Every structure is written in structure tokens, then in C-alpha cells.
Length: 268
DNA sequence: CTTTCAGCCTGACGGC
DNA sequence: TGCCGTCAGGCTGAAA
Image (cartoon, rainbow, N blue to C red):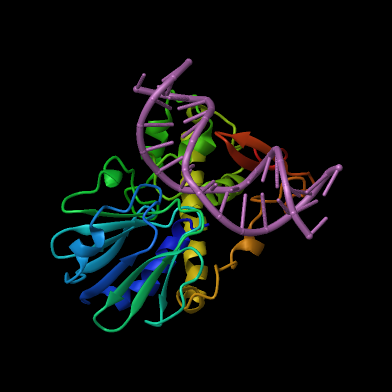
């Protein structure tokens, strides 16, 4: 389940093999993803050179000479570099062969991801909030946006218009570290506590990216998804278990259709 | 305007 | 053993 750290890890892994390479051949075996793969995408991008590979939120952007491809890994997607003649695994949907001989495979069992082509800006990228690790994401901004909002703070910080890239795992962890109950109304949290929360969001995401860096080679070589962050999680997936800080039992509630685990003792 | 919620999809898992 | 229901998750767009 790629969250922002996994997408960033993927970017760092594949970028050197794609940048400044010509796309020789693209094969789309399954075009039914979150949105249909842009019709004719393969023919359009073949022959173009990759100018750069970047990331915005959880989207990867492959910039080409006449436009760009927008790639999302959805819930279960992954990109890996393979040998040119590697066997196709179940759920390998798209392959991109580069001039160097490098081959990129897109694998996505649940098909929540996307591969889209556009000559201009992708509509998915308009209306996105700031990157969580940039200075544009600051507590003042978050505090101002939260005023008069009755929505619970957890779905609030997971809203891409507030800040991008904060998924269920890291939202839960950042709220725990901040001592804030996930179901507290966003508009009823003080500026001081938003300062803490903002800091913890940055902290938890950058720590995960750092750890992603250590499993970078494995990840790109395609030996399965990294499970490196699991033992560091204090609340996510631990409903009913004992809190790591006090001796209370962690509670599991639904917020905006998402499971939300917190410690009723430590979080208020 | 804000907020909620169904739907997309497959695999893993628990109950029987 | 296998069948069925439930859950997980990001994101959009329609409904309230």
C-alpha cells in the first residue's frame, strides 16, 4: 500500500534508469485501471525522450518531449526494473522499454492506479495542497484552513486540498505523537496543537522516507513490498492492543470510512 | 459552501 | 476443502 514515502522511494529507484532515455516500446496489457489508460498512450510516447521524472503528492510524473505521463500506484501498485525478457507475472499490466535496455514493469493487483497522458497540465494535479515536507506546508496555513470546520481532524489532514500525501497510516501516527484524538473537530484545535501536528506529520513522513531509502535496492529489484516501517507503528493496525506509552487499550473507530486507531488515554 | 458516502478492484482472512 | 462475507486502501464525483 504505497503512501508518500513508498512513492518517493520508487521515484528515487527508477529515476536514474529513465532520465534522458528514449522510450523504445510500451506494452499495455490491461488498460482498465482507476481511469482507462489514455487511448493510444503507447503510440504517443514511443520515440520520445524522458526529460525528467518527478513526484507531486502520490503521483509520479514522467516528463516527455511533448507532454507527460501521470502515474499513480493506487493501493497495490508497484514499478520495478526488470530484465527485458522477464516473465510476465499475474497483474503485470504495463511495460516500458528504454533505449538503454532497461525495462520498467507496472504491477497492480487491485488496479486502483493510473497511467495517463496529457500534453498540458493533468487535471488531477490542479487543486492540490502543499507538499508536506516543503515550507509551504506550515501550521499557520493548516490552522487558518481549519477554522469553522466541523469535520474530524483526521479526515481533515488526509484531504489533499489541505496537504497532500498524508494517508491513513501516517495520519494516525502523527495524531498519536501529537496527543490529538482523531475524531476531534478540526475547527476546535488550538494553533499551538496544529504547530505540533504539523511538525509530527513532517517528522513521521521523513523518517519513513529515510527508511525507504535503506530498502531502496530491494524495492526496485522487485523482491516484494518493503515492510520496514511496520515495527515502528504505534497505533496503526494495533486496535485492541496496549498503548506503547501508557497501559491503556487502543481504540479502533471509523472516521470517513477509514479505520482510525488511537489511545483514549494519551489523545484528547 | 461543507460534508458524507458509494464505487472502483483483488487478495487475505475468519467463520462455518 | 471451499464458499461466503468482510476488510483494506486513495481518490473522485454525486448526493445531501
